Image (cartoon, rainbow, N blue to C red; front, side):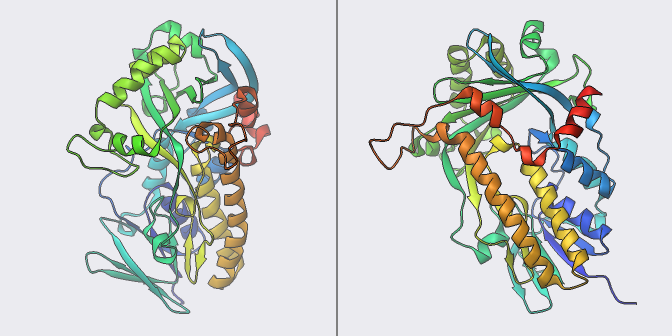
Length: 415
């Protein structure tokens, strides 16, 4: 009896878990190699849920019910005085990153999920690919999937000059328990996704499920993300901890110097509606993210394929990062199944489809964030005026509608 084809998956977050589950379902042996140790469920915050993501999770047997998400019937622009200036009906569903990660992690066989594995290099022949790790171990398979995120080691081997590009603004984000919020604040936010537009900035605020996917009033959480332009010099300062160590564009929340969250909380009262300022000021731990995007010119290198954030990073405005990873994994598994064992043919088809999708998604995210970067990324022509913010148009175009099946989301909203 012939042995099953073997896939080496570098990266054990959501993308790697989805690829592993789909490939196992397609008859492959799939082994995940994750550099970190311990439970990754504490990573991430709020995220958008598409029907595509839910369908793929159901396909691999991961427990997820749309009713455990937070349904938002509309997007609304709220002025400084808490008046709604524009509202756009668009049913969407929000949830939290652990809610997607945990059921997928439960599916991965422990013997096929190896932690503390730091990839050093990849070597391959026409028929096999081998991964070498920092502890001296090596593993050989028929395919290697680079699902190792923004700073992908896999991508760097083949495309060492392709790096994320800073978009000239940062995102401050956080989650607070609904029980810690005054009733007036909860009423003002309601079930909508609330947008606020201080000069040259943008904030979103919404309800997300509480502990154990609890959506009962009083048991939910309130999530916010506030986009603020920041110069490169200021960025270096913000990502340098109290000891003087600079963390690039990703700093652990406990190491953020306290004066920066304090400034955000103070500015919230000056620039935002009072109800939103209360959410920010009652959030116990505010996270800081430098907004970047990344586009790879290739996704396939012999028997090596990139997927998810290792290949394309769209700015958060599309709310589609996890859905894109799911669709990448689905396409890869489908093409491997359809190719009848011809891995190079399957990867060529996979690359053609997912490159086009990634480019479209990144372009849409740059359009949605263009006005945010205008302050520190002026147009090349000095006579061209800076980009103006059109809140209503941004609200109409926000997200990644190409990933959402509006009819099915609407059916859930009615339910």
